[in-house]
Length: 296
Image 1 (spheres, rainbow, N blue to C red):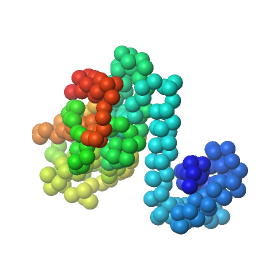
Image 2 (image 1 turned 180 degrees about the vertical axis):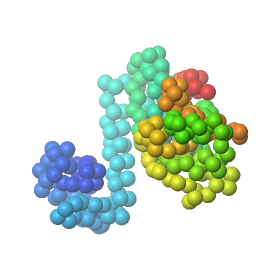
Image 3 (image 1 turned 45 degrees about the vertical axis):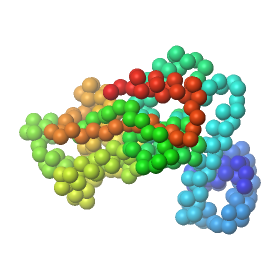
Image 4 (image 1 turned 60 degrees about the horizontal axis):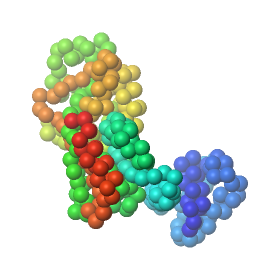
């Protein structure tokens, strides 16, 4: 198994076709096909199902795809760490909200004071971000769920309130004016996050506490892209439970309505790293800067 085979397999798996994948890796289509067949022989399993019309992943192929992505990320991390031209590199895993809303101003501020530092950020869900810490793909991860693993050091960095967010139109403005109950509110179309999302896990627990059954919801969409969910709400598609920091701009500009619940619905964000890891001075400085400057 070599990295060229992995790159070819990942591109075919991502694009579901050989022709465009071959263009991406700058090889001929027969060469890519040969690489993947060699990989399948070495692994002893079929990774792809090939028909004249399409290419799909087998069950084993789906499993191997996640490992192949991780191996390519590790290769990139190793190459960057060995490159003197990049100076001190810190590789961060992050779930969606930290990656999109918490970390950008932090990284910018830290870089302004430490010009020799270079960041590499890998966005995923909380579960994957923690796995990347454990397997060494990243140095640290910033996540919205407390991982249950004794091999990790875990520090809480901030708290974020969860809100129910709705579109702004006559229907929803009238609804808010009448102060609807939760049961009335959740008769509206609902947009859910993916199952690995920390926000979605908090939403599931919230529904359970209030005896609202998830299967009774009118689910309009389920998406793993937070920006897509924001746009769906703005366009009037439905309501969702969102992190306050992820909709602060939309609420401030009047593009959405927000409901603050009578109970405190909040979540916390954490930075995690391996306990056995010996932190460099630069890494300690970054953690201190993050804890001091993250919005609270």
